[in-house]
Amino acid sequence: MRCPSCGHLEDRVVDSREATDGQATRRRRECLGCGRRFTTYERMEENLPQVVKKDGRREPFDRQKIVEGVARACQKRPISAARVEALVAEVERQVQELGEKEVESRVVGEAVMARLRALDPVAFVRFASVYRAFEDVGDFMSELAGLAPGRGKP
Image 1 (cartoon, rainbow, N blue to C red):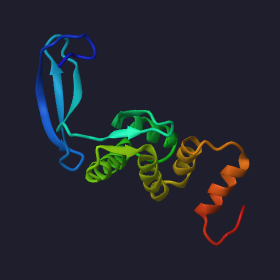
Image 2 (tube, rainbow, N blue to C red):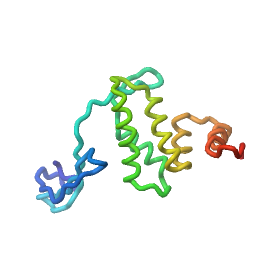
Image 3 (cartoon, one colour):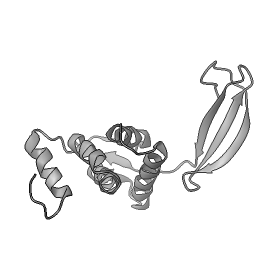
Image 4 (cartoon, rainbow, N blue to C red):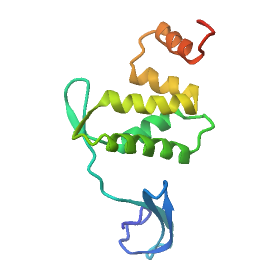
């Protein structure tokens, strides 16, 4: 493993722990070159499906893209990085359990939104505004009205 600080290739493992419900191993490492410590995650390689985009393009399932999108939606909200990771792990597991070679991006997006809706309404609306490409305030208002059943439009 290359040290992120100095680029040295030798390190030692200081600590190993189970992470994300046994789906990964977290390793704390110490660089033998500069002595700095860093963390790595080891995951089992999985056969994840291709994602079929709205325009018909296909690309490999990219967990990191989901992490970045959810983290952006959760910025300045009381949501820990661990909770974001858990949410993404749930979505990844759901997609994998479909057992398909290809999955529409809509399926992935809807799975993320369902979990964000339950986690934090503000993060949900932020994610939905990008995912659903809201074009005006009316789109936001419609989505907000859906968050508060029985209250009508604000």
